[in-house]
Image 1 (cartoon, rainbow, N blue to C red):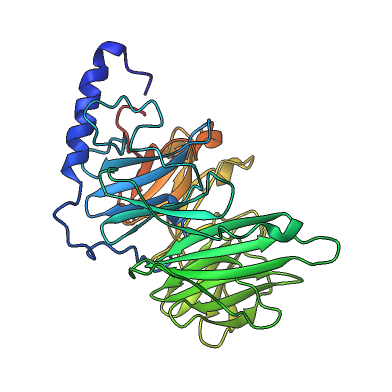
Image 2: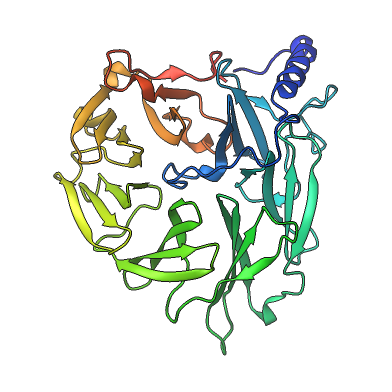
Length: 389
């Protein structure tokens, strides 16, 4: 959407306020909303998009570095800043849609609250924040690692969320006399104590980037000499090395279903792999010549792929089952302009136009597929924001 003329600004602000009030969640029981989505990380950053009932939330990092939350009613399909202030122009740091401080591009929904973390503005430690579903009542809950200074070495934190947990990793890069040091902690958001509990990892095992999870369990990929799957129980703080992989997976290409991890490596590898979460046994369930299939995003019972590369016959969107059998595809002529999948959530596959790719983290997606239309003659890319915003 082009910028609205100044004379329409007041009505837009009012619309934003009314819409925000509609989904505040103030009458929702505290523990009602829990983001236990199964394959949490299969859609390239679930901590950037989440939903409650009929409302979808999307976290963007704007050009100036601020993190801003948008929301959209699934029926209206219009993205608005998550701010219930009736007099707010959504243009400065006082807007409720903007997260405090140097927030990472990660937020999470638990217990009718939205949680996020930031680096402490004082330069020591990290802070845990939360706010209401309408964007109001930003509240700092705890500061962690205030005493850490790296011992003269460079250090950093990162974090991610799963179910009712926040997982925090502290990385000290080391000096000439010390090596790289990583510590991993778990924070249970359902407790009043909000205490970080350290995971004592087995010798030679690290808790790498997450790829899937369910309940208390989280599966992570660790890469040293080879890629390995590590399984963590965030309740008991126990970790095992499940298996070594024969391939290096894309972190956003995994789905957890019926006791198996499915990885789609459909461009360089041309394969769909299945990993048994008990035995760690690996098998190839589908194989094709590299650069001939669009297997990228396993989700539910499907594998989604999109391509706008130099091979005209491959341009478009392809949908297969978990065994690699083609169900439906939209060619370039069927989906003009060219659209690439960026997020999958609930009943929707979100996408952005080529040419918008540099801005994909700066604004919510503008296109979507309805998963319910798969296998019918009605499947097509629809506008999420009807006016093109």
